[in-house]
Length: 236
Image (cartoon, rainbow, N blue to C red; front, top):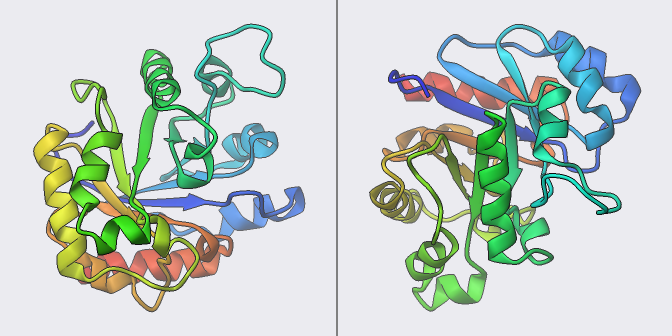
């Protein structure tokens, strides 16, 4: 990764945005020299998105298989992602983590690194764990075994904040982000969880956060542009 810190704006479309909307989305996307805009569409649209992706934006996948090849019906390998132009890939999102073992996630990261795809490794605690003051313990356990000598980004997504409209305090986010950076060789750390245009600027005040992972609010390019603009403007 570049020695000059950049801000990251990651759009996780999940299972949204039809094929006919992709071209218009990218044409309306406003890139910035001080940020890395990463769009993560569904598997079936990765090739098309990569083909029409405008300068200044990158393509990410929402997950990849822990296997490199073989008889694994429905799975997509890191090498396949590389062949269609993927440069980043989410790993361990809470909506996926419940179905995968931690060893599988480590294998995903390893396979992605071999293909020069940067993993965006998601960590986060439940509301019960947060209330009991176990956030750092849980996140530390989730990061165990990761190779921080390779390119990797960590995304902190409190599970209880995803899609609920409830977000932790700036102080709480910074405490977690600072802890992560103390463990991950100071690789970039993102925040995700109910990010929208109304609260994006507040995360610019979090010293140890290097960008945002955005879900539902990223489905519209105009909304993503607004979020990016407010966050980056407040960061300068």
